[in-house]
Image (cartoon, rainbow, N blue to C red; front, side, top):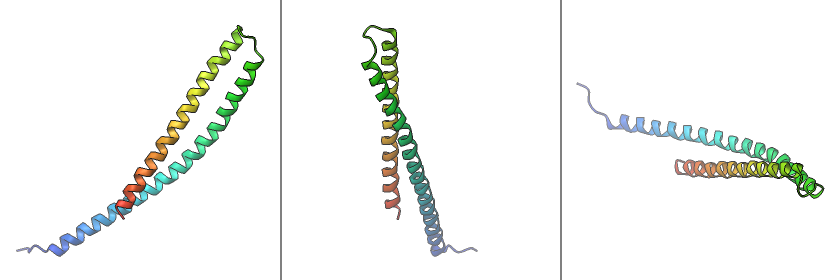
Length: 109
């Protein structure tokens, strides 16, 4: 007959909790790394988007009011604005995910 030994069960639970904590820490570190990488990518993309927007603004100053070229530039500005907004949203999302993972990691320490 096999006897129930609660201390073995507690050891298994503690071991399982340690493994879960290590897994969470590993995931958190990956997320932090991803956040750093995404911040760099977002920054690298924002700079040329900003430069294009500035160039389009300069071009608008030298184009006739009712020209087709002006219309193309104005449409381009709408696209550039959308890109800038998307990059900002991605950055906000990445920061939010980082904060949530940090809270989870702190909770499981």
